[in-house]
Amino acid sequence: MTASSRTAGGSRALRVGLNLVYLVRDSGGAGTYARELLRALLEEAPETHVIAFVSSEVPADVLETPWPGAVDFVRLPVKVTHGPPGAFALAVAAQWGAIPLLAARRRLDVVHGLANVTPLMSPGVATLVTMLDLIWIHHPETMEAAATKGMLRVAPVSARRADRVLALSESAAADIARTLGLSRSKIDVAHMGVRLETPRPTPTGERDLRGKLDLGEEPILLCVAQKRAHKNLAGLLRALALLSDGSARLVLPGTPTLHEAELQQLAAELGVAHRVRFPGWLSDEELEGLYHLATCFVLPSFQEGFGLPVLEAMARDLPVACSNVSSLPEVAGDAALLFDPRDLKAIALALDRLLADGTLRDLMRVKGRERCRRFSWRATARSTLASYRRAIAQRRGPCSSP
Image 1 (cartoon, helix red, strand yellow):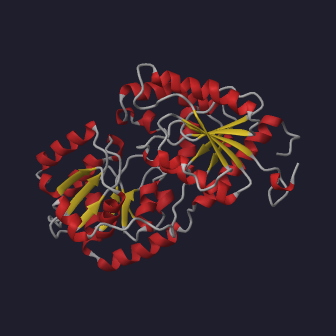
Image 2 (cartoon, rainbow, N blue to C red):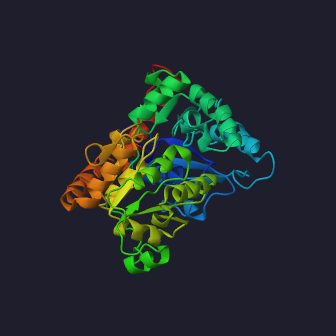
């Protein structure tokens, strides 16, 4: 074994397989997790060799890795979003059948499924699965029925068969153990992170953005969240109608969903349609501009596996108000105004405070940036690598030394 195949601490460098079959252009937070973890793993342990298993729909930018030689991409001939009938079954077959064979052939140490799916049988190779959340169990209306049924078929059994399970928060770990009947000792936690120093896109100018979205000169409430029922955007609209500041505008960017039509109808019924904007897809520069011109950020979700949008807002010095349930208090700490997401008056009160009190907003900006420093992607990578080694040790037996 050469010196380059060992880490600085003397342990053997790992050969890791990442199941990124799910990664497509519009993968949301799960896509961010894949991109950032891949980058952070190779920053934290550059000697690690990564095999990334992807579908034919993998975004081009994912393949343009800045670590030549450190990542090998294996493109599997399956689709996950625009395939023919039976595409889902083929994608699962690739993850449960092809990946184990390829992992054994390439002599990998561990295969990590980053989005709820990992091989059920993988001779000679340890397995780990990140359970992003169980929102699709607790709030089945948040996905199409076929997608929920498919997830029920593949995710629980993946978690039960894996050597280790990775959760994104302590709250999610407790929920996974309780709901799936797993031992809590089988579950590791690796929080997601945020990059404070990474250069961001040049924000679209405020005047141009206000003109494009018809925002006038009014204060802006920003909520960057998928338009799905568990995000409680209906509750946010009802709270908007209760605000003392009747001029504030709420902006809800993001890919349209069937739920969006329900939200638009509700806004009309509440008499606040003229104060709500649903801009759909925005460029990176336009979204960055929204963060800059907004007065505060709000996330009223009933459940989150982690709650990355809270940190993303704090990293941009935007004061935050968010729910006091699930993982959000764990992420936000005292750097956000917390509210009960089922209490409309509490939501409105938190937003009124941030809209009216400039001193409070300044304090939240300082606390938010301090909070962000507790969550780095390098820390995510360290925790994930530790989980890999636990999985390998379990697979090899109590006397092994991974």
